[in-house]
Amino acid sequence: MALAERPLVPEASAAARLGAWLQTVPHAYWVVGAILLLMPLVANSFFLFQVFGWAFILGMIGLSLMFLAGYGGMVSLAQMSIAALAGYMVAILGDSGVEKISLLWPWWLYVPVAIFIASAFATLVGALAVRTEGIYTIMITLAFAAAFFYFTRQNYTIFNGYSGFANVVPPPLFGVNWRDPVPFYYLSLGCAALSYFAVVYISRSPFGLALQGVRDNPRRMAALGFNVVAHRIAAYSLAAVIASVAGILLVWQNAQISPGTAGLPAVIDILVIAIVGGLAHPIGPFIGALIYVLLRTFSPNVLAYLALPDDRFKLLIGLGFLVVVYWSPDGVLGLWKRLQDRRRKRRDPLVERSEQT
Image 1 (cartoon, rainbow, N blue to C red):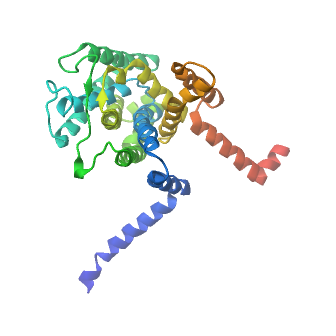
Image 2 (image 1 turned 60 degrees about the horizontal axis):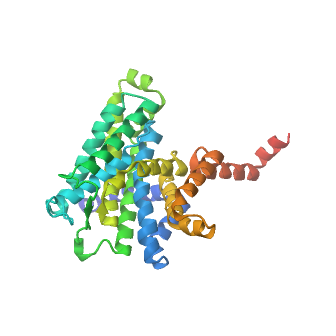
Image 3 (image 1 turned 30 degrees about the vertical axis):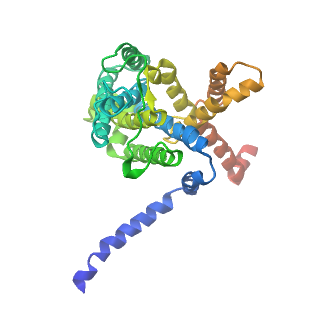
């Protein structure tokens, strides 16, 4: 009996720890999670695939930028290029409509290889960018993004030039067509959730805390024995994994990839998404991505109502960006935090009494 009862002690302690952790999760997280899981019951195929699926993908790319800028103090404009490189590798190593280039590798081989190649490229970018600061870091990453765009457009041997690759679809794993709206919605939602929780976990790990210390005071961290350059390069590599997964989902969603996927407008869009959502918390890029996708999807209808050309949708996106940045430099999250602070002050009688005196 004693031997049989011994394993119950660690199980009880593990259950207690799990229960204590679940109690710390805000109620809003459970509500949002339940809504997202049940969304296919109320949303049509267009919203599931084109709106939410695209928002999850762009949110993941923005999340990779938020991880670098928010926790590492490094603004990278190469995140869209990293995502596009992973998408290109899927088309080149896997199956596509360009049979003379695609190598027809199995999915379980070309997916990790694509992520590895894109992460290696990001590590190279980071190794050069981390030795600079401020505007120089932005210019170096922008130079890599521009070089990647023009190289893919002019190279026909590997990247098939301006045409790119078509008919790039996900493998029918478990007999499921993952480009159908509902399966793709849950696939993109699962990848986005894993990326979000991974960033939250890393930010609270010893590496994440050291990275934030490097962001705040690199000289002091170096004096304490931390390798500042190594931490920054590792941050680029970790962020690249998230961007690479998003790039693979993007090429599967569009079933094609071309140089325009990593064009300079797309590079700037990721920066706008991250800033509008907010760089203070990992949920910010997903909020910014949803706002961007809604504006991008429905702005032509608004423009048509105003008797303006449909190609002016960038004007609405730019105006929305200016409004958010003007009223809240910390993005939508910063605006929400300020509203919560005002509500707390109104409810706290001590704060009201101090303000009246």
